Length: 285
Length: 285
Image (cartoon, rainbow over all chains, first blue to last red):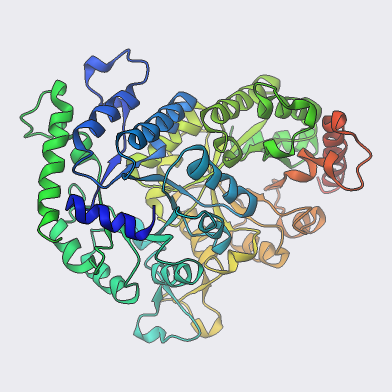
């Protein structure tokens, strides 16, 4: 899917919601015990209940790999089901891969060809070699980690670099900025997104200044403390430029302490939660 | 496997060879076409022919994932086969994962529990959150990317940080050094290794100075230009402290331009190549 196609879907659905499929088998309803493909069956009902409210889904590979090859099969079944349900849905493999040359090309094969995802999240640590091979696939996207929403983003991502052309006394260039600047040289807004967490809205505004056109995949709304209004205020551009991800607050909405839904109503709970987020998003579109 | 167990195996076998199982289906012998589990069958013959010469194997997940869930199954079959063949062999899942909290815990489940690997390679970009969950597994190892062997390691890994307590005019602290220093705070030499490429022997010597005890997983020997003698000279410590990885030069030795081996003799070619490397390694043990 290209930039324009994604933007059109956002306008049509009045939503920039990405639903994270972090499908943890330990959190599934008790009646699903013994089901052959529990991760897929759970996802299927969630997708059925939310596909009109979201523009993207983001299966998190860790939760499938933890179940071995049967888990990987359920990742594939989930991707195929989303494609069948609505071919305009954008699918992000949240895999955070990062390797070089012929290895990166194999990962691209895994997520862009073998599984028909639109995008894959990438860790930039190893540099251009680990991102460029993904950019060679037309209509596919590299989603590069920039400033993540977790506390230990401060460990390396926010460290200042002593670049030749900057003034360290003024704070230097943080690593995440350098990653964004270099990635903007390697790709275009048509094939490169950045992960920018919702937990630091000030940083989101700052990054949008030097990165006006690229889409941002924004985690951290909800449980982690970020808000849709702040993300929209500080991160939106003229083509929306945002995919805000919500995982557990939708996927396992029925498990929230104040949830009125039983385990049998998990998809209904997800739909209600997604609708609330999408409704708020529509105010900004 | 613990530090002492690994060192004992190195002494016993007089080898610190790790064989990379980057099993690319496009490079397999033509007679394997139509085989149901070609990656596994190829690996099996390679392991049979080389297990006495190596102390470790390193399946590279990208090559399995590119074949979908049937590829992941063959990764699992390979790990199980290595375990059966010789329980003292050290198995590294070269997965370069890096994610946070409950996601990292799922990756640990995938590689330490569901598949019985000893170690997994990790990208440190997201900080402590992405490494610490792996350190909670007793007898298992986090292999943290520090200074990789690829050209674009210069993009971020070798950038200098403007830390408060260092003198930028003296060159600052490169990111890879910061990664090593921080990781040494999170883990111990009993559960943390570092990836340090063979392509920059001067850096290997420098890193060994401030990181005397940890094992280094060293890629880049052979095709990429690094040599066993230089790695041993600059990287070895009193407990060897090295696992030198060779992938394609052993795995696909029969495909080398000057190889006397036919495609039917691929395991014989691998054995001869591994023997040559192990023989050189024995000089330094």
